[in-house]
Image 1 (cartoon, each protein chain N blue to C red):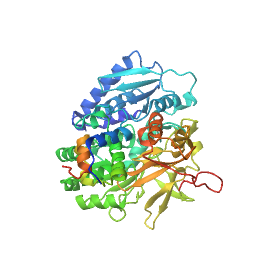
Image 2 (cartoon, rainbow over the protein chains, first blue to last red):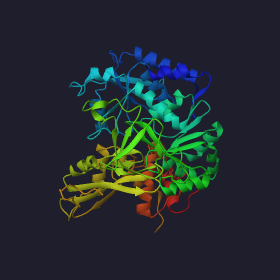
Image 3 (cartoon, rainbow over the protein chains, first blue to last red):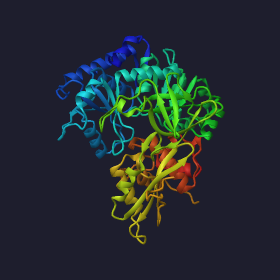
Image 4 (cartoon, rainbow over the protein chains, first blue to last red):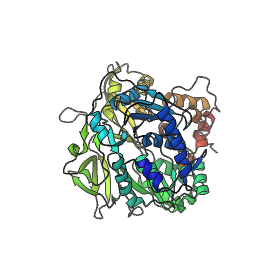
Amino acid sequence: MNIVDLIFQRATAADNAVISPELRLTFGELEARMNDCANRMSADAAWPKKSRPRIGLDAPSGTDYIVVALAILKQNACFVPIPAELTASERAQLAKSTALDAIVFAKNAEDWRIEPVTHDSTPAFDEAALAALNPAFIRFSSGTTGTSKGIVISHETLLGRITAANEGLRIGPQDRVLWVLPMAHHFAVSIILYLYHGATTILAPASDPKVMLAMMREHGATVMYGSPYHYTMLSGQPDAAALGSLRLAVSTAFALSTEVAALFANKTGLHLTQGMGIIEAGLPILNLEHAKDKPTSIGQPLPAFEVKLDDGELMLRGPGLFDAYLTPWQPRDTVLRDGWFATGDIAAQDEDGCLYLRGRVRSVINVGGLKCFPEEVEAVLCSHPGVKAARVSARAHPALGAMPSAEIIPQDAAAPPPVGELRKLCQERLSAYKVPLFYTFVSELPLTASGKLRRY
Amino acid sequence: MPATTPTAMIDLVRETVLPDLPADFSAEADFFESGLDSMGVMQLVMFLEERFAKKVEPDELSRANFRSGNALAALVNGQAA
């Protein structure tokens, strides 16, 4: 089974599939463009001569990101998105841990090159076992390093999760979805879902609210997907009220605050629906019932899912759960406990069954929807000779979620290292979103009873 | 707080978000063309609040206000369009 084949078997060729400021493609045109791209790729001398190769994609978000990604999937290759913000060392780490066979660098669907990747050691996972899963995607929950495991999602799992998510979203051929999120981070239970259900995806520039609103109006968008940041920006537009014509505005990536929810509702008359997207499970929880009275809740589980709290930790059971962790290799059944997946999120549930996220079991900072593990940043800071110890924590902002901020014990309190040097060191080694925004020098850091850094 | 300058804003952007901005980056040159993205805008919003006590209002979160050194200085000095 290949999800791409299913998409085009179901689609009406003359319907619009994707509309961007540069390009508009019907499903028929999208399929032709994808087939042309796939044929030229497989004929390229650098395309790996093996079944189910693992292919990285480095391309800007846009119509042709979709074309090239589908062309890779269509050839039964396993697709590994390479986010633009990764540094060279993070990219190398990603290529190594997924044992990439090649990377496609694409400016668009016509202008691309394939670079084979060679490795000096064999993959750390079982290649045959991976291939047997019919893998479509390998995704990483954070950058690439340290704690991130590589999450394998098969074609069957993709179908399971987009079917389950659509019991809540109810997206169909009559829908036009306004899209502003980065495709390297959001693709499966979003763009693939819209295509599979015959909807039109409208691609708008993420940092230009004027163009977003103009495209929304021109193309009659019915649904929007964005983060609280985008909704704050849109609320500030003089003609924000036009957004009230959407039937559904999903807020994702990071926590929706009461302030942003109220601001958006006041300006547009529409209540933001918070959802919980999670790479291991798709979109299992969505606030369809209580967007108005409980906007900060992520809502209730969709019909196909069950949830429970285990010592405060949110556990999930349902279709479309990930197939395996890649490194170390752990098939799904060895990870689940009686079919339950432990999300790592601390949650609370009210009398209506509405869920609220309260934090993480492990320390992690959610920066605009991207995960930043403080330990990774602290290790980089501590590699500076002038740093004795460091603690990285979240600096919260109502509209933006959180940004990492560092407290540092210098080796020599009289001569702490220049902040510019610390920032530069982090910029060289870490994705931009992980680089601490603010640096404070302190003489001590609070420890727990067992001598670990106290994090909250 | 004294009025800020386009040069100070370009220095801030170079120091915090776009380390590779050339030394001769002009006050009208476009940060977005040099790689400023929405994450960078979010970081700048927090810096402007922290260092310049400038609370960026939702209706100021436009591309035009973050486009260049001139635009950012006007935003911080309360002269935004």
